[in-house]
Length: 269
Image 1: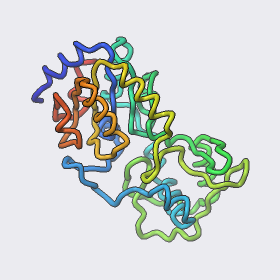
Image 2: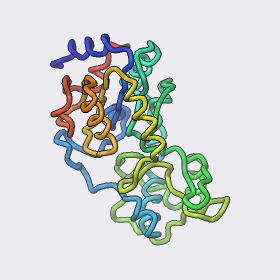
Image 3: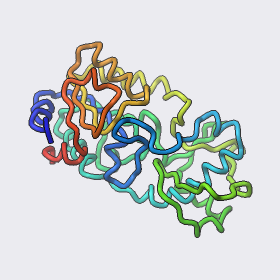
């Protein structure tokens, strides 16, 4: 792993690291990622916020696939990269951790100060009254209304999705919000929507207070994450990255280690 010694020195000499994590951090936990080493889509792009909200057929397709995919997604456990970053936080050397992931694995590893930029998929939110309920409870409701789907098997896809391309989704039943009867959606930022402004501003505040930035497992192809690299570069904040393949921010990153996240950060354990 070229640059591992430099990475270790980089982390060692900074005491207020702002850490940004992406899909590569959770991939060793068995959660598929979206992009290849060149930053290109590996599969059709995920459902957009607009399509989900405007089309009942899209919602049926999404929740049917999620009913199958959630079973393996919820069983994912933190890997060595999550544990290493939690250890780094416990050492007092971290300003904050901002994650583009929605799996909650940083918290499961014991990390305390986590900003979930795109939300958490283990929660479901009503788009009418903003009521929230646990995804596990919603899974039970989906299973109760669609028992024949439980026997289906499918290839896992990112973020609890599953490939069911040939299925007929027209009769799939979706529970309404128990509080107001509104549309229920995972409490995450879908493509085509913006992360909540307050959450972004909180993250910018931590970045401005940091003495360095560390990127772990993100191609930065989505602007919601890349803008933090832009801001750090504009401020002259040192930036290091661990990622397999190219990133959108390669021209702004001072130190880059092309390696699996859990291997590059193993020294922290």
